[in-house]
Length: 291
Image 1 (cartoon, rainbow, N blue to C red):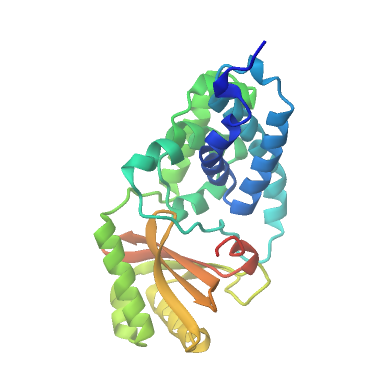
Image 2: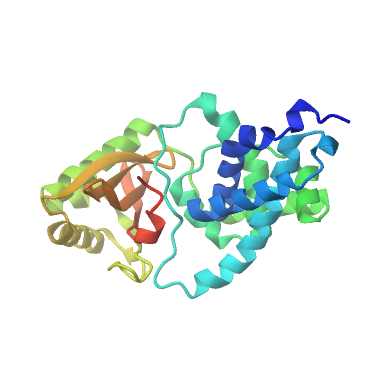
């Protein structure tokens, strides 16, 4: 019996970008997502593809199970992580509606960070259903739970994200304006202008992983964050450092590099025109995929 074309050897490559987007949102790291895709590819190669009616559904289940297993072990490793653990940032094109079908509903870096507080089951149900419109029955099969239980998991995840501060996206131009004001104030050493663009309750998160210098715990309050930023600029932004505005997981952010190698990425949450949270990733192991 001949294989159906849709389930042939090229079916995995046709779904690779979609599967990569699923894995990244489930795991929060590009490197782990790539490892999962490699494992999924090997399993696909060993599968009787003539029996696969829907390659995307089949591969989504495979990737989900691999990610779910990985999340359990990753949780233990992150408890011993040096400093605050943040996701690996992706530098992306600005969100384009035409690509939503391929990559699922876009999600900000801040929401990725918040999802670390969900259980593996909650995160899986939320990501697959809310971001990729996968049905509860299909998710239930991947998690070996009932559809009703998966529905409850997704609902609980939504409530937890709202309670932890998940907010709807603001207009891109408002977010971009806040990032521009922050950049100009920081570059000019203007404490007053920096305080004006920071929310009084701003929180600064940083991830150096114990590899490079970074705050071990979040820094709270506009005055402390502003002075921290000015000190970092004075110490690290030397003439050989190039700072650029980039799109971090679909939202305006900053990246700085030396000789073409990214040394840090800064993502923001903006509320009412002011920066409410900032996320600085400087762990080189989390930036190695950025070229």
